[in-house]
Length: 132
Image (cartoon, rainbow, N blue to C red; front, side, top):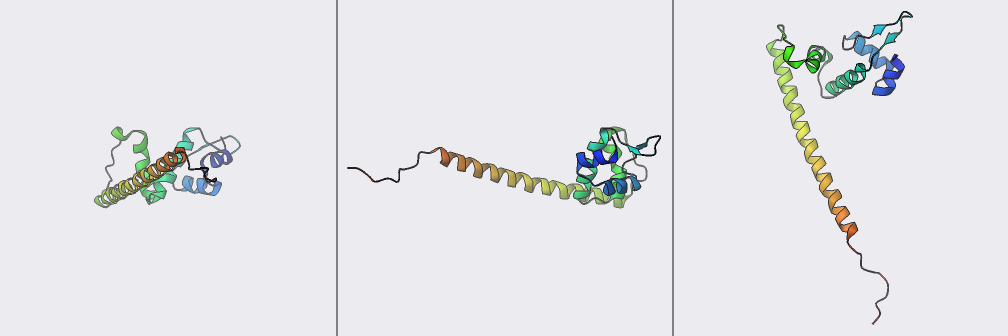
């Protein structure tokens, strides 16, 4: 697929996809005409990149951890500095906190919706005149 289709499928602008390429986050093939060619795996890769960026990770760290998303047990980083490991640990903990908040919010919404549905199912008293 070409850059326009990848953009459409991921919601990332063409400009952003070119930036990811400049940063070494994605490496498309080039057709004989020089156009970028992406296979289907780039849809997930771009979504992963966007999620990691949204969580606050800088592109230089994302570039280092992207291989782990494919084969976490076979990757070793001899150049992993204590600073990088501390940053990743902090980001992981921050993500865990955000996930906990999201789960609590989802559960609260579910409870609210269940209550609304329960009350909708109850018969309502008629508002007409009472005959006696």
